[in-house]
Image (spheres, rainbow, N blue to C red):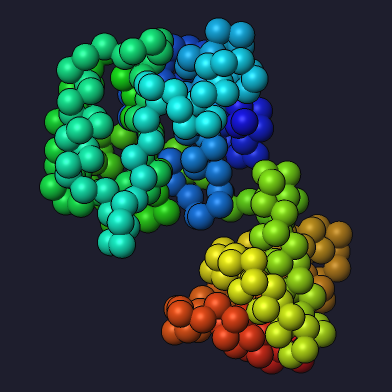
Length: 281
Ligand SMILES: [Zn+2]
């Protein structure tokens, strides 16, 4: 049950918390950041902060309003997610769920909130249908768009939103956010770099068995290594700092390999560890 204080993105949280406190929250936010950064949690936390009576401006996470928002069953907090094999948000969805709804006041909320998980999934026609509403927002209605690729959005959508950027989360933050399997796999991937092919195969199997997002595991491992490099550098340990920094960069570069083996995350993880073994040698 995300509240603002549960979202481990101090800068982004400070921006929205301050804006809510001053009654100056922009009617359309664009949350940008990598997968797993907590964009959806932040969007729901903002919806709670705007509507919770127990802790106005913050959200309590446990009252009936907050619970329904968290569980996705609040009638005025509506999430538009990708649909179907094409993983898009079609214009019909925008018409039915947004355009038709905004002609009427919210059912019960103080502030109605539309959450669009990945705004680049809006079909061009759907994005255009949304534009007018974004331009002339009805009273007590807010939009929170999320995206990993803001540059791919229509400039007209971008320009109508206030952008709030979220950074990548490290393994500890991911674990705190309940992403134990992903955090464990990322750390196992880092260990596998030292231990070699046998360990790599085990990580690859784990990623396949647990149906983890291989790309997210690699990203998280890179963030973690980057954090270790920074900590080592601050402690004056320049050798380890350089090594971990190089590994982090190599992991990012290995994303290319991952894309090549998109259909088979296990192959990708093994290929990546092979590359990194050369970096570490
Ligand atoms: Zn509450």
